Length: 386
Image 1 (tube, helix red, strand yellow):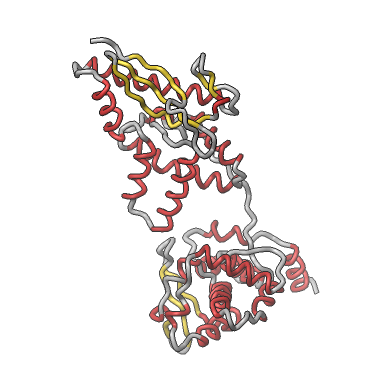
Image 2 (tube, rainbow, N blue to C red):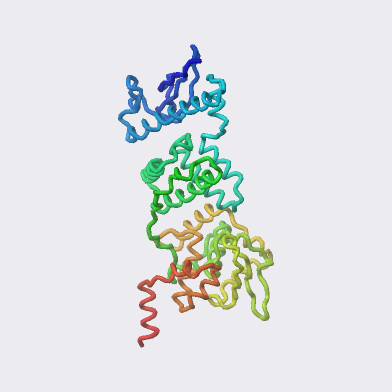
């Protein structure tokens, strides 16, 4: 039996896609028959050297050429394994071996299965899908053999060129690390080949968006157009969370059952969606009982108050409300939680109490809100240095 001959070919069908690119394939030739295998590498015509059969004049030409050679080498390795195992070698059996192994060589196929089958919250699943889609934009096909330190660096460069923030890149890298760990644990990838062994996920200090007392007062005074009741509803929900310190996920999981009377006081009692910590809030003691006033507006149907559209659309409405109130900087729904924590600390509430009100498991998480701002310095000096 003769050996299969492999050759890289470009734009075999002489057709360019809408980006003006064509596919590089591996031509496998055996006994006067050919089969073609996609490398998932697309190039513009001027980026392919037909004589040398390699990439040229491409920003990542060197890395792409290594990838193409590795792809061919992986096919040859499959062929060699079949020979050693005494199995018949043909173009059909080679194709079957590459396709089955199942999905065996495709990290993207493995990643997709992991996301679909993961026992995680839907918000976490959405984050994983987001990283999966970015990775697929980076490369249409990824083999386990390609998961190297260089691959991670190239992926980071790709995201940086797309204008992603350092912390957004770090988030995607953390999400990517999850299926890579699973691949190692399940034997798809040798532990010594773990690409994150020598890769450091980089983050930068992030200043959380929060409203100062004047900005919050502007929103409290704002009266949206009555022809857009959804704006008033969004504003009320946001203000409620500024006073109670709730996340979007916690607010939208509430119902009338979470409002309970303890003695003569009305409390909000709920279990955090994110941390599963029980949180108990005495509503009459928080910011002068403003939460109770908002609940009273929706007393006829409390469930309606806690129903909001998806977080993205809520944030779009908040941008509109911010402009209507004359606020100079945009803010998201999560800014309500940061506003609550910052104002409580500014008012002198002990940080461990703030920790319990926010439902943090660790006080270190709460301490990110305790940075000393100019406003805090002035407040403290006026209080203690009269």
